[in-house]
Figure: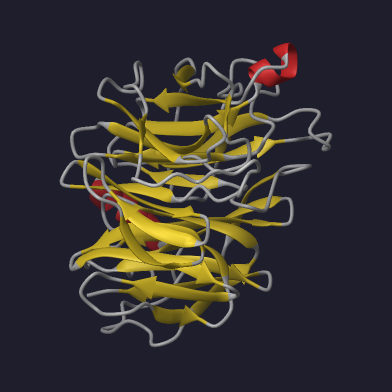
Amino acid sequence: MHLRVLAIAASLATAVLPSVAPAQPRQVGEGTQPRLATGAAGEVFVTFAKRETVMVAASIDDGQTFATPTVVATITGLPLGMRRGPRIAACSGTVVISAIESARGGGKDGDLFAWVSADAGKAWTKSAKPLNSVAAAAREGLHDMGSDGKGLVAVVWLDMRKVNKEGGGTEVWVATSADGGKTWGEDRLAYVNSGGTVCECCNPSITFGPKGEMFVMFRNALNGSRNMYLTASSDGGKTWSPATKLGEGTWMLNACPMDGGTVTASAGKPVTVWRRAGSIYLSEPSKDERLIGEGIQPVVEFAKSGPVVVWQEGSTLVHWQPDTGPAKTLAEKGQYPVLTPTKRGQVLAAWEASGTIMTQLIGD
């Protein structure tokens, strides 16, 4: 199956495998809010929004070059900006993209749908119904998607069903697919703040461990603070552990920073990066937080040489690794970076800059 997916992905690509990584960032196409996924056979996919059209492009050379982007779907009122937009996951035999429809705009509706492709992006089938069982529950527009690389896919989102009907708080909900995004089970509650709400405009994130365990990180709104919390599931998303706070400090803030960080996994353990006030921290449960820089919108992923963190310092993107000294400039201009590991052991970064999707390989 892996060879089949790689062969299909090759039909989308036009470049021959270069022997070395490009020295400068490369353009993928016009758009905003990119997301990346790496398939089981090493193929890399990027999805992004070109205004209200969801696009996708494939690479068979570890992200050094991408084929011409193609259309997945056009969605009237597609929520964008501040980590809103389409998400992508790659499985053995399928590629899955999720997006939130807001057909009338203005926050009047907002349902989460998935599109699945069995031919590496040539044709797409939309899920028969929304992943959120209550209409308009996903209207905040913030969600994330991950996969175990085989057939298990999960989507997490900020859910407003109680806000819409009861005047309650925003919650964290999850839906899963056991067949690579072709069909979806019922959505389930992952976290509720019994005393109020989670942070209403910070993106949640999700990742998988090697045994199929799921980790979800989100920003809470508890007792006047806006700290990061982590919850986990070891039974395919049916039940979730009590959420635990990340880091030692507390950010007392009566506002939403619109910055949710990211979670990844190494050796089965979750590794997180997030912002508190103007500082960027790397953190693992039960370990001390590590201050690594100043800025916003941090993301983390693992290269063969260790973790790679990218974030924004003003309008500049920087990247950092534990053993390579201070953070280095990745791009003079860029925002909303995302990362994915490559088969060669590097990390591929993507970001938007002046309405263009850019990519660059990092690490050894």
